[in-house]
Amino acid sequence: MNAKTIDNLVIVESPAKAHTIASYLGKDFTVMSSVGHIRSIPTDKELKKGQKAIDTDHDFATVYAVDADKKKTVAELKAAAVKAKTVWLATDEDREGEAIAWHLCETLGLDPKKTNRIVFHEITKSAITDAIKNPRQIDMSLVQAQQARQILDRLVGFELSPVVWRKVPGGKSAGRVQSPAVKLLVEKVK
Image (tube, rainbow, N blue to C red; front, side, top):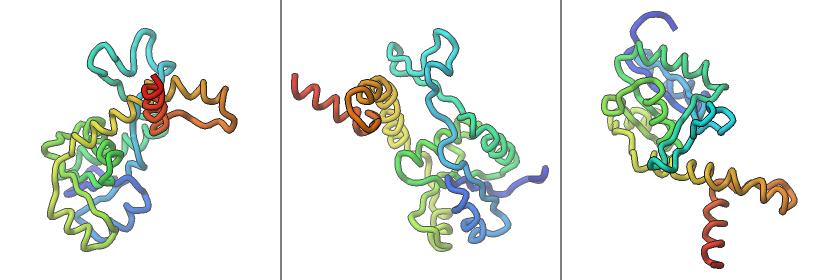
């Protein structure tokens, strides 16, 4: 990427989608991929001594860190975003995609109110151009739903998984859906 200004930067999750979408949008659009999530909640081992990834005493304040394998991708996206007149976040419309869009704003220093969030349900020229005509802002309710799931996974699943590994053959984890399900069972038995 040269030092020229970019008219429109579109960030998608998938590198495979990026090439196709770029062919539909034309020369005024640069399409790049985040290759999925770019940051996550670090483990306690990755933090400085005394630091908490999730501070349960302070309204579950959460620390996020750029994943080691995404540092180069983030640097490339940040360099492009600085040159872009308009940024379009075109991640999936589910809570994971919404969270990725929010993490992109946070990490790339984008103002969520000035960043266009677009969604489409098929990779066709008409779907992509319709999405460009109908941008919206990031849906923080979806972001918060994803954060709650990830925080619960970290607080319950990470603690429960070693117990499951010792007691249940096959190395199953107790994360995500399993953690709330186990919690509901325990509460029901009480």
